[in-house]
Each structure stands twice: as C-alpha cells, then as structure tokens.
Length: 146
Image 1 (cartoon, rainbow, N blue to C red):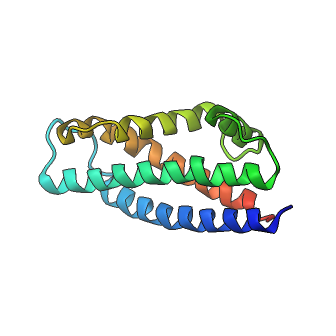
Image 2: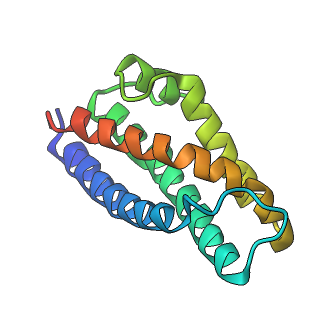
Image 3: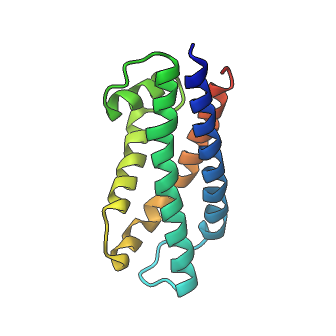
C-alpha cells in the first residue's frame, strides 16, 4: 500500500466528514418542513442550503473518497458505475442503485439553473439525506483499517 494514497484518502475523508457535519446541521433544521407548494423565505433558504450541502457532500463521497479507496486498494478506477458497484461489494452501501439515485439527484440539482425550480428537489433531498449520512458512517468504518 502506498502511504501517499492513504494520506490522500485520509485528507478526502476528513473533508467529507466536515461536509457531512454541515449536512446534518442543515437536515436537523429542515426535516420537519415537509413538502409544500409555497415555502416561507426562511424555509426556502434553509432547504436551499441543505440542497447545496447535499450536492457538495455527495460529490466528495463519490468523486473523492470512493475513488481514493479504489486507489489505495489498487483497483482500476473505471467508471462511476464501477466505483458504485465496488462500494456495494465492500458493503459501504446497501446497493449500488441507491448510491446511483443519490448521485443522480445531485446531478439534477447542480444542472438546475433557475432558482425557482430548485424547490422541486427539496423533498427528495430530505428523503435521501439520512441515507447519505449512513453511507458516510459506513465509509468511515470501512476506512478505519487504513
């Protein structure tokens, strides 16, 4: 095992964990809001912050941490689907499909340019955030061996 690769994994994991703390904070502030046709300005602001943090954290998980694990374990990185399948084999995620859904939601969010339209993602973000946090806990458990 290459020490440099392990150091990069640790650094990426630290960044992911910091981001996850912010996602948890936002989730706690928003989990009781629920789906609505019209949000107050305060509700919208809090949900938009959660949505942004969800997207950034998902990106770090898949594109930084899971890739770093593959590098440490000398896996051929391959495609995002390969990375997700290996995460399932490692039992980091319940299913690669769940991780794919989490990542697809992230992609939809970051490619929505009309602020008014972002609210259509709020309910899904509220649904997937606890799953994202659980995956991060499992990835930390998995990486503890390094």
